[in-house]
Amino acid sequence: MYIISDRHEGILGAAKQIFPHAGHGYCVEHLRRNMVSKFRGNATDLGWKFKAAYNASTIKEYEEYMALMDSQDVRIRPWLEKIGPHRWAKCMSGSRRYDVMTSNCAESMNNVSVCAREYSVSKLIDFLRERMQKWFVERKEKAEKTQTILTKKREKHLVALQSQAAKLKVKPTSYFEFEVVDRHCR
Image (tube, rainbow, N blue to C red; front, side, top):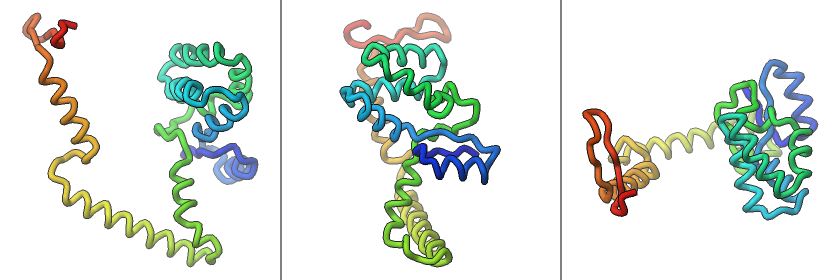
């Protein structure tokens, strides 16, 4: 199990007490917003560098993006290191994060259940069960209408790639290797 939170003290304490063996990381979207606010940097420029750093697969790649942030503001690295890179960077996490980098799922459920917050526990659980059943039925119906094995988004992406690929020339260089060039011979 791996818990993603926004660094709220109550969550930190409860997670340690109730799930002592679970990994615990921080929501990178919350960190990014706090960082941009704290260092008053260009949100777009700072945002992509931070995203690249937390998504880095290797420590070398992580360090390259951290160096880019250093060049923007030398106070960022110490701030992030105090938080602990093992809590937010994929390559530094000793636990399996399962590619979950944000607490968006929990945030979404919070937004859905705003009207149900005053319910008793049993009524709240019924509300959430009904809501999830509705979502599953909607997704099942949508999936049944799908004509391909891919989702609409992936199918559209594949069609776009296919039209780009049609413009490429493929030249065999050996029995198993090919050279692929565009119309400009690149």
